[in-house]
Amino acid sequence: MNKWTFLLAVMLTPIASATDSSKSCSIASCDAGEKVITYIEKGEFYFACPTKDLSEYIATLLGLVSATYQLTGKLPNISAKTGEPEYQGQTKEMIDALRSSAGVSTFDQAQALCTKGKAKIPVMVMNNPEDAMSIWVVGANQKPFWMPKSFLNKR
Image (cartoon, rainbow, N blue to C red; front, side):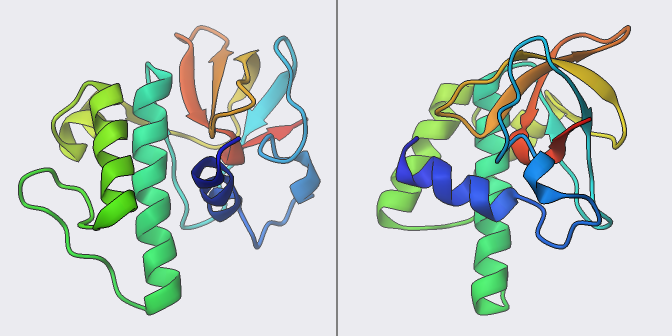
C-alpha cells in the first residue's frame, strides 16, 4: 500500500462510529466470497462505481477535500475546468494521474458514472485488492460495483 492510499484510507475510515471500527473492511480482512454490509454514519456518503479507477479517483478527491477542511477549516478552491480541488505539486500530479486512469475529464463526469451509495446493503466481496482504497462487491439482484473499503463492515 503506497503512502497516499494508506493516508486516504485512514482519513475515510469513519471515526465516530456507533459500531466496532475493527469490523471495517479498511481495517479488517474482507476476503472474496465473504458477506459484508455497507455502512454510512450520519452526514457521510460514498459512491458506488462501475470501475476501481473511478472509485479510487472519487474517494481520493473527497478524502482530500475532507482532510483540507479538517486541517484548515476551509474548503479548497475548486477548478472551474475539472471540478476538482486545486492543489499543487505532488498532490496535483496524483489527482491528474487518478483522473487519467479513471478515463474522465472532470469530477462531474466521474460522479455521473457512479451512484450515491446506501447504507445497510448486504453484499458479497468479489475482490479486495490490498493496495487499494476500494473493494469490489455485489448485492442480491445488483450489478457488481466498486466502493471505498471504509464504508463496508463485516457482518
